[in-house]
Amino acid sequence: MNLAPPVSETISIAELSPLFHPLFSNIASPPRTVWIEGKPSALKLLERLPEYGLAVVGTRSPDRRSVFLLQETVRRLRGTPLVIVSGLARGIDSAAHESALAANLPTIAILGCGIQRTYPPENLRLRKRILEAGGLVLSEFDPHLDALPGCFIQRNRIIAGMSKATWIVQSGYRSGALNTAHWTLKQGRTLFVTPSFPGDPSFLGNENLMTNPTAIPVYNAEAFAACWIGLFSEIVKNRRNSKNPPVIELIVEIERGMREGRELISIVEERSRRTGESVESLIKKIDRGTLT
Image 1 (cartoon, one colour):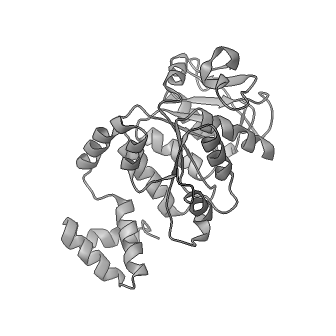
Image 2 (cartoon, helix red, strand yellow):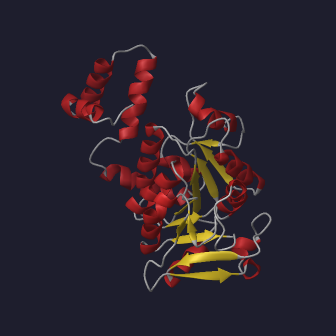
């Protein structure tokens, strides 16, 4: 397990009693102590929560299409007041933090271990980047506690509680993200879920969640206007400023066409005629492994 060394003199670890902070005291089974790492100025992020907190979680082994959807969606949220909250785990969590950094959105990592540890260890560099960009790292556990299986389940209520809404990007039948969804609904927050093709084993958790009548499907960033209507104009502006058609739209279009029995080349040619993007550029994207 990696020790978390100081990133710079302006970044430090502090202990906070939730009894004196309404954000934490209103979380289900409030933590007795919260350890926070970040720049002093970054503590102001807590004032934007839970109102502008969006928790983004999912499987540790996501499909490439899910990562593309996550990256493209968060990119569309650039310039909004949202704070991306996740758990610094492998897979979707890491992609959520990375996407937030790329979109210049603040992001907060809730650890499943003590604040003096980093798990998984390969995310130490990502942790430093979050802190340097003005984000925060939080933990309710003893500062030197190693990551234990029960810790991840325990911290999920905090991820959900610090956020106004949670987006389950991808989850299998048995996934820790489903526990976060449970805490989201239990704490009266909004639940967003990526839809899937019926019976897709890598999305069975999402499929089950979509049976809940309150779950809102996420096809693109505009879905979040259901929770934050003020975001819509910024999302539309970001879409208009995009020079290239979103990769995820191309992926979805090809998958839909192939399920209908059409040949790949006919799908690409039709896309080219409609959008003006050359067949050659679309094929290059496929050759580079952009599509799966």
